[in-house]
Amino acid sequence: MTLTELRYIVSLARERHFGRAAEKCHVSQPTLSVALKKVESRLGVTLFERTPADVHPTPIGEKIALQAERVLQEAERLKDIAGQGKDPLIGPLRVGVIYTIAPYLLPRLIPALHVHAPRMPLFLSENFTVNLGEQLRRGELDVIIIALPFEEPGIVVRPLYDEPFCVALPNGHPLAANKTISSAQVAAENLLLLGKGNCFRDQVIEACPKLSQPGGMEGALEGSSLETVRHMVASGAGISVVPISAAKSWPLSPDLLQIRRFSAPQPMRRVGLAWRVTFPRPQVIDVLHAAIEDSPPFGALKIRR
Image (cartoon, rainbow, N blue to C red):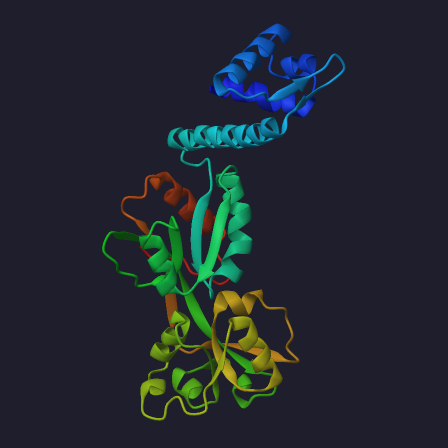
């Protein structure tokens, strides 16, 4: 069966009228009628019951019309895929983002990317770095946005921006009297951290070396997300270290929560893109990088070349 014959079947099943079906297919009524007769003859079944007043699909005709509609939809998808080969900015992009970046980057990235590539919707996945890396290697994701370093065979990395860390304190905490806070002062407090498996937890421990010493994690509490940590800090459970993009995105509530910078040297993380070296749409990476460069998360710093 040809795609044209499938269109005839679907059109007649919808319209239930030879004249209207032929008009939808831009052919004459006899052409459509003869073509469908030939299809029925080849298949050895009757697809449509015809009366002077009506035409409607038989039970087997309904099934074939439904399947024909699916085939036509898949044929259109083939055209879309081929179109992506001509224009890599057309068609979905599967993007993975780690939990501590997604809520603060995506609200700014999506509008910017819509300007750069309006016909490239994002299929988004939030997860831990290790899981996103595995999905990237398996081809389930096209590109991931993660904290660097990220070194994997066959994976290309491109830095995006640097992001300072800052300290979140409950209102009235003694350290809130300081303009800046040292890593040693942070390590001496009851610290709220993200759970194990989250790379930002490891970055905080690295930024505050005393936490790695024996007993350095004594009294530390865990939260499942930065938003949960924010509420725990506001409740007075302790202090926390958070990315500046998160702190600057939170609603202003100085009566509950105070944010302070670190004293020099200020700890920070470098955020970047990672993709397979064999990814067939390299132009997409340039566009994604440009969109993030145009609208980085609040507080992000340009990388000094």
